[in-house]
Image 1: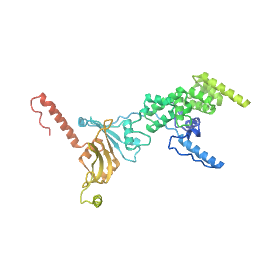
Image 2 (image 1 turned 90 degrees about the vertical axis):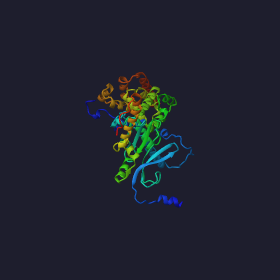
Image 3 (image 1 turned 135 degrees about the vertical axis):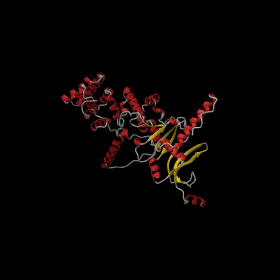
Length: 301
Length: 132
């Protein structure tokens, strides 16, 4: 455990981190409100003045911000193994276990009592999987199934990734699993790894999963591909935000100390970062050169 | 129709509130609802409140699912409701009430019978006397 106080290790939910991640996610209205497969209805046309159009755009931006709220990133949950009673003399009376769920409406699901009486007489608290199943049976939630769909198994995730449907599978995952369940974390990590392997970062840009992906990559120091992609698309501000976040999470690294001493901004920050931290220096230098040439030609012409 | 009305609006003399199982489901597929009702009502008739359910057949994961609305159960027990024997046994298994003595006795009897089945083929003498 670090000797400094809690402020040293920024968490996913901190204001500063969230601001940086939100800036990198972007706000492409065309993508956020792209047609979801619903019932087919003929398009509605409205005649608006300039002021009304601005008002409508502003409201659309508000709604888009709500849609882009990031799902939480939590550590994996500890398995429950708590025995409430041992009645060994009940052994042999039953052949199957009983699962008792408390159906009181007003208690939150995390505090609900779900106990299992095993055939050998032990009364224990239910495991997390049993809990999730029982809660879904008695208090069904939209988009969640009692038994998780087969698509979340590793061999089937491969097929999903080949069809470039990372966002859909992540939405399904958020609906199906709790944020601290091992399945949720596993699916998310597989998706992020696949995106990073094939450099498909743009699939998640302007969705609510972009922040989680950036957090994962920065924690594991695999930011090179993302940095290259940002520079290729001329998103220099996003690149600087990414490096700022990296420095916040790894303050002991070389480039963080240099940046703090010399108070670097913009392209210089990126250059220092590339020299000290990245593995794929060549690619990023090339991309930076191309960007600078493009800037030079556009300002010249 | 008149008969239906009088059956629903029935008022009884005497009787008390019981918490018991009401049987539902289909042929060869029972399903119990844990219900607070007047003791004089039909088993599956009009009840005061449903407090839970019990599926006696094991599901795909080999478990028998039961739901109990403990808050309302406590309310009815506080109002002076009585419990039927299977309801008491179920609540004892759940841990809400202490284990029913008949559950313990049933387990003992089962073990005794298992011992008697195993013992006589081995030893010629009659099994050790009946344990009361």
